[in-house]
Amino acid sequence: MEAGHGLAGVRQLWQSSHTLLVIPIVLIVVITVVDQLVPADVHLGPLLVIAPAITASFAGPWLTGLVGFLAVGAQAYIGWHFGVLFSRNVLVQLLALAVLSAMIVFFCVVRERHRRQLAQVRSVAEAAQHVLLWPLPERIGALRIACLYMAAEDEAQIGGDLYAATRITGGVRIMMGDVRGKGLSAIGEAALLLGAFREAAHRHTSLPELAASLEQSVTRYLADFEPAEETGERFATTLLLELPDDDHIIRVVCCGHPPPLVLSPGSVLTVPSLHPAPPLGIGEVGPEGYRIDVLSFEPGDTLLLYTDGVIEARDSDGDFYPFETRAAQWSEAGPESLLHHIRRDLLAYTRGRLDDDAAFVALRREPDAHRRRHQGRVTHGGRLGGST
Figure (cartoon, rainbow, N blue to C red):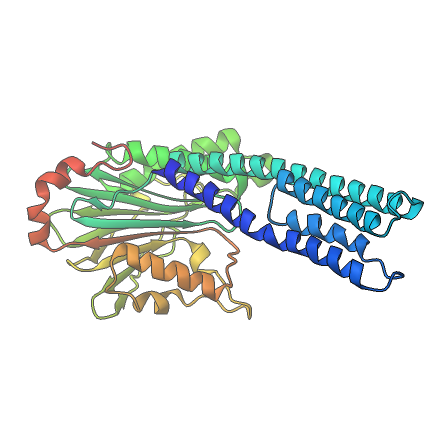
């Protein structure tokens, strides 16, 4: 299907280029005709260079070269019409037009090469993102899930924001995090944290033990790879959540991350007060250093996780995005629809430009009756983040 969409896109681009090709061709015809109608001391032939210049804005080197050739031909016809084709002035104009058209074609070739390189880089970035952030399924256990990643850089696809979820016996565990910094170092630390969570989530019976295990993994990573000039400045804020199948609650361990939002039908918004521990990588903390907060999560409620790129987004006046107020407007929307509304509203608020990456995960607990009807399918289909 993706290949079909790609071919359709190429076909559409090809058709649009041919449609726009009418503009420079009509321009060549108009300049040629008008040049023969104006007084003899007025020469419009040099304006023909506009035609290949316009073509280069929407077409490739071949079509641009064709229009340049037609422009040179039109200049030659004008000279022939007035009987001065082989005069020094007309020959110089022909040579200048040919050289300028050739230069435009050359820049088209360079631009197309850069465009292909950029497309390759983007495809590699997309592949890396799929490896780093495994796509979350639409359903796991009693939960419907949707996720969204918004990169601050136009051409970037991955960064330090991360999320993962895995099915465990009797419930689901989820991690939402944000690695401080940008670039390859942040991506490397995010990859390590995701891999550590996907493995440790099945080996530790409690969230404090899981958090302590992740802290050890991050500490070992920083000891080996943290630059000396950044000692103590690299860390990751994290939320660890556990949603049991047989109880309408959420267990949360917060490691310096913004608290989640719980949206209930009727535009009811709950912002829980958590007991945060230090971010991962600040200092090694044992299981006793993490406290579990228990939140109510009834059927029909939606849990919204996010990173600080959302709440730190600003408009043109420097005002922060009112995330809680805006999110409460769509409390009855499904997870995918909710993230669609937030994405559109956030981009409109910031005029399409984020200062930092932003990631979201929305989860809705389904009614128990609906869960029981799908329990057999969910148990076998609830594979997430490499769990079984």
